[in-house]
Picture 1 (tube, rainbow, N blue to C red):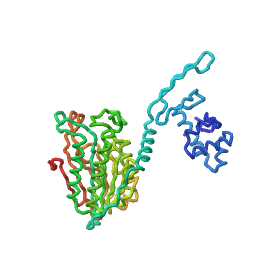
Picture 2 (cartoon, helix red, strand yellow):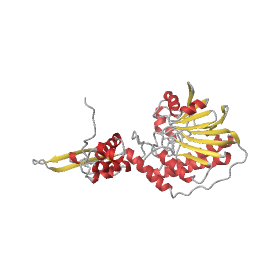
Picture 3 (cartoon, rainbow, N blue to C red):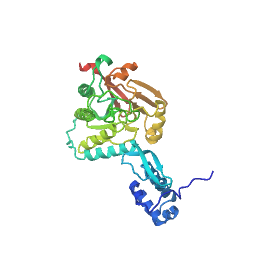
Picture 4 (tube, helix red, strand yellow):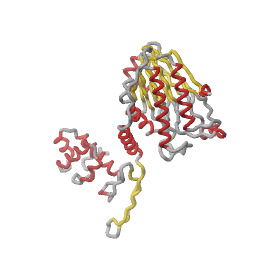
Length: 398
């Protein structure tokens, strides 16, 4: 079979409508092709680019245009609004072959909607009040780091005690999470640095409909989406403020969960803007599904646990962080998703999951899930790895 090329894609380079689907680089390549009368090889030479990069740009423009409903050669000229994609078309032609009526069916473009959502959150966060720098505690052990794994908080979840065994709503979540975390911080030795690790599913739902974005599972929600966001941001800010009283530096990592694909992204951006003027707080705003941090001879990976099996995680770490893998002795993955404690030692790396403080919802109650509720602090020494571990059970709050 001959190798497929893209020299003669059905794009009219004199059609300016294609420019709305171009990035800056793609626009440059598109206009170069116009000047070269459609010859992509000549266009690449004229602007000092590679032929493959120009062809790739034109291919991507063609694909994005068709995805949004613009393909004139196929009688498709109705462009879908930004955030939507073409699902299908039905066209009625007359006996003369002319198009009479066309029905255009669209669907939500989840990837583009996520991009738009992140852009909107960035814009809104620009006007948020910044937290002013605070005074760091004077006496801290520079050899120690405290790690606070937050297992699946599910802020916004609603549970009826008579059905699931324990009442749960936004008010209870705020009281329990802030209370347990404050108590946990005060059990920690005065470590110089700490990392608050949100292991994913911080928010129970990812949209106004109260559903998961991927599976469209309907969830038991307490109140409106905006109320969930308001309480969730308040909870994690209170956690950060508690940590700042004990530790000199605080780092925050928000893993992407299966319940909050976009929520985790805007939470990181929001916190990054709020603490922009506080040099003692660092917020990891990377949208990657895998996060890493190091403390002396210890290397940690953070992943929710829903897209990569536990047995594959050690090799992911060794590949992503080959230099740090070689420089460290104690390597651990921190995960959530399954709502109960597990720890397994693989060659060169441990993989551990953590419990949630949240109560069981109806789904978990009916499914027979019965994990206990607690939160932990891991104390890490630069030389010796984990040297202490503290646990606060939810019942300790009374």
